[in-house]
Amino acid sequence: MKNYGIIVPCYNEENRLPYEAFVEFAGKHQEVLICFVNDGSKDNTLALLKALQATQPESIEVLNLEQNGGKAEAVRQGMLHVFRNSSAQLIGFLDADLATSAEEWLEMAKYKEKLPQYGAIVGSRIQRLGASILRDDNRSMFSKMVKTFIRVILKTPFQDTQCGAKIFSRDLIPFLFKTPFMTPWLFDIEIFLRLQKKFGKTTLQKGVLEYPLMNWKEVGDSKLKMKHAVKIPMQLAKLYYQYHLNGEKKI
Image 1: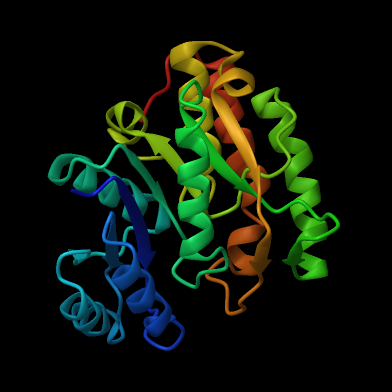
Image 2: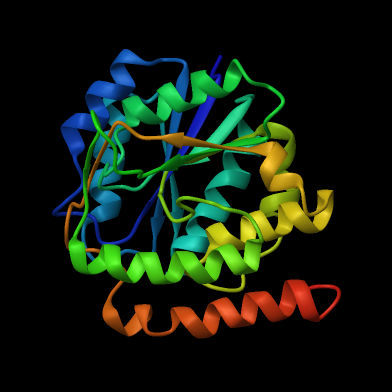
């Protein structure tokens, strides 16, 4: 019986996937199903994931997508796969580089179980005493600017929408992940916009819990390059138009 499902999207992760850390976590936590989604990698990521699966076949699955569809689509396909093929009650995702550790993801999940009134819990990289949050200063400045626009779009004082660690109650998965997302990098924002559209504007304040992480580290070699970052303001404008100005969203 798997109580928790973690989706890990992977694209060309052959040289930076923390293989041993995943093996150790899977061995210690048989209540967790880890689903690695190979997003059309061009290196030996798929072979590495298959080898990883062989170490813990009861706890690790590999979903192979032959065509690269981007992180948003890899996460979406993984969430639906775990929903359809397991009984996990809390399903979420985690970055392949373990910027947030799998152990802390599980702590988030167990914390949410104590507060069932929340439909989702999301990791938040808040700098504070006692926590070790190591972020690139240049990226942090850009993130602060983006966060300002995101607060306008969501109309909610989110501290951090872009952290790669998020968990959702099982009953929300079909609605949130049924249809493809509009943008490859801002799908987190669209998840929250979908929640608002279905349940009303106060949904995020009452139904989503931000969880201050104790540890987070910038691993480097991020898949989000400058050529993608410069497109973010336009993508944010597109989301605002579709969800606030255009009535029913069009895929």
